[in-house]
Image 1 (cartoon, rainbow, N blue to C red):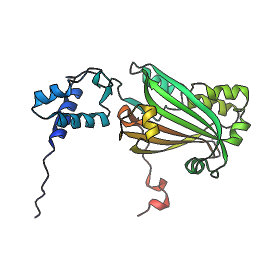
Image 2 (image 1 turned 135 degrees about the vertical axis):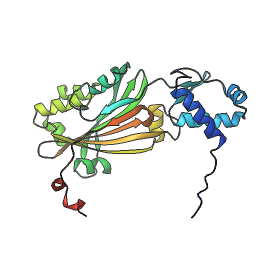
Image 3 (image 1 turned 180 degrees about the vertical axis):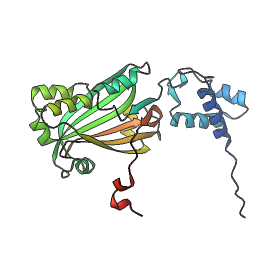
Image 4 (image 1 turned 45 degrees about the vertical axis):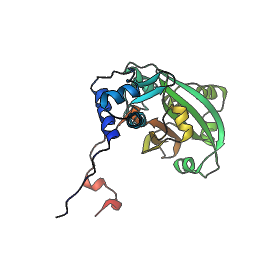
Length: 268
């Protein structure tokens, strides 16, 4: 029998766990300042370097944030639940998710333009890389804290055929409304989504994403590739969402499949 030997947890990780517990139990409340590093070092009998490394872990986990010239504070924005069942049924779903937590959500549309489809977007839309698409970039906030980046891409011919390039459609795209309002507009013109599929991954934020979302270096984000398909199963939009992992909870539910509903590729 082989004896498994585990290295003891490093001191700074133990301190990070202690501070995390204090935050989670309400010893430090949302928006409270943490004691200074010298104060914590004195209280816990460790070096200031050890405290600094512990707080860095909390910053990467999204539990605290540094305000320059002021100190380190407990983050105040609660975790938001994104419920896939209702997310696109209501044009105001994103707003309602935030308001249910007492937050004041808002969105800004930073760009609407014609671009060439990247490989990722082209694969999702079933077109060739380099084909023209309309892209709509948005950044969303809760109580002025950035909570999500959303880039929506529509095939050029669908945008043109549905009137999204005309004044009324362009005004809609340039507004701060969510995808639900765009889907309703498309549905009135024969391109309404009939089903959706999503791929979800977790990765480290890029430098540009970290700046836009006010994240620390190395903080993880949730990346969702959301594809809307019409009744003929043609993709009419792909939306790429980048969301700070510490701010979001994703909820999905589905019915159990019978054995005969599984594809042949899943057979043993």
